[in-house]
Image (cartoon, rainbow, N blue to C red; front, side, top):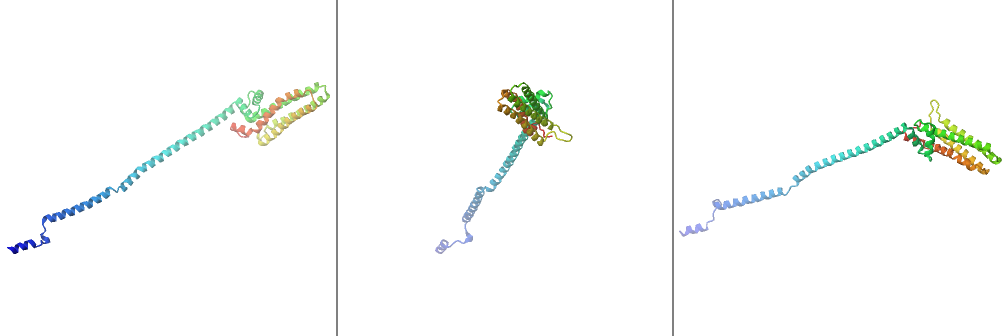
Length: 275
């Protein structure tokens, strides 16, 4: 009895004879460890959102880029439309102004005379020659030269009358020289008018013709000034009277010089070129 009791107390249980509760406990511990690992793995996945967020960012950014590009194209198209429209309106306005000038004699004369220092006398003198002036800058230029011829011719007649009525020998001689100088001036101006006539196959106005005309008109003005200087040297009593009579020819020759000098710019206003 004592032997069996001793044996049962000190005998070590074999592995195969493990109690079910112990085995269950080990299995429970193992399962808990696996669950912890799985939880940790799952936690790692939940806290690693780089890939989904990156894809979402790219998906969101792409429509924004497309929208920005489309908006830029639309704005650029609108801006170009405004620019083209403005240029078109400006071109149409210039063409309309040119057509208006070409269709109205009065407007044409004013446009040509606008380059002169004596615009009112320029307009009045040319308009008085012909009520139906051809609205052509070259024709108006020729008329301005004819005005000069008429005015210098009248001045020459005035001086010749003074010569006839003068009793002062010195003044009479100076007035005679003045009359000859005015005839020279009239001849130069007639040459200017003749230069405007175009023969068969010849251009009505060229740069060379304008240069020649300006030379002749300038020489005619010099002839007039020489006349006044001669009267002044002789102490003529009619000096002031002659000087006043030369005012209109001087103005008209000045007008013609200005028109000739600005002929290219004038033709541009009329949308024309030298022909």
